[in-house]
Image 1 (cartoon, rainbow, N blue to C red):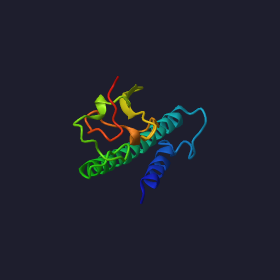
Image 2: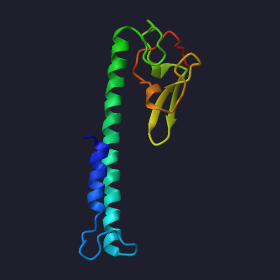
Image 3: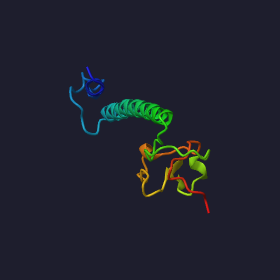
Image 4: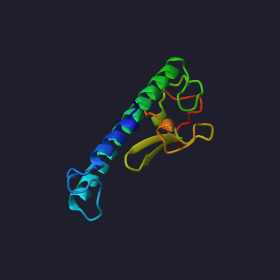
Length: 138
């Protein structure tokens, strides 16, 4: 059984009035029915949020592993270019950009780089070794 059907089963149980002897279906205006529906909607939102967070965390872990593998091969994870032999890092490059919106994100603004999508896939690290596109800050 998948997470979506588990959530809908739990929601269906919660939507049944606790006071079925009074009325077997939810009744508009009944405070007990309103409370029951409110609890069900909040619980299902929490369940969905947990599943989304777990899936996002797994994608982040996989992305980090792929980035480490590329660095080990001598390829820059963001630009997919060979690493430079100049002992510099992305943080000292003229194309290094910092964006702040709900957090701090580092991006490469080089036209041959990954672009700026405002998603985690194009984030770079200050400490990554520079690629062959590296230019000194003027």
